[in-house]
Length: 300
Image (cartoon, rainbow, N blue to C red; front, side, top):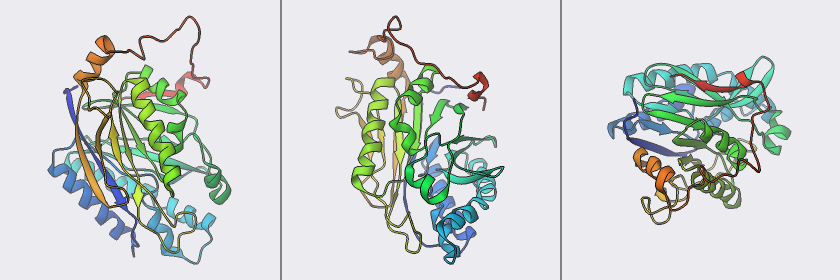
């Protein structure tokens, strides 16, 4: 069912030391409960929001610590999936390190309120993720069906590659979720400005979420900078600055925004400019080069 207006909530997450996995999950549940209280359809958490778990074993080097955290991922996804059902809200569980075979990935999890779960691996790994942690990029791009419409998820660096959101837009997504982790303002602005461009060129809404605060004893994730936001296309039907909502920088807080899908339909058919419709297919094209089954429309 595509209801027309979708209520999206975003958590700008405070990194804080925790003494156990249970304490981390308590914090996640607090925000899920709070956002469900506002009848949100989605709640978005940031990339690597479970990084505080790396400090539980401060004796480990960073390459071992990230793998120790990856060992918790199945448990966390299971518990967060239970929250989605209990609180009746679709959860984009940020991203977490994930072991698949002997390979370490960075994966974002969609936990639907009907109990089903899916994942989107980060495709482009940053130089730091590769150098510090030995991470690898995934090779599948997913479109997710939900009870309120079709969405995509791209983790941080991936939004800086316009081909991926365009491929998702061609499969009919209305909302793109971007969990990110950035340490400095210039790093954050790369993500933000690319996300804003993706909203305009693909005629969709884009929600971004990051972390704030500091994490002592966690090398490579010690400082963070974030200003979470929800962006719209840029035309008369949308806010004058194409920003539906934005957080105060570097403060733990939440955003709630109502996204009207009928405005996207109107824009695509009768907007001042029609970015998707005006493309010159006679001059250029974009295609997914992997196996066809690597480009997935995942049923909810």
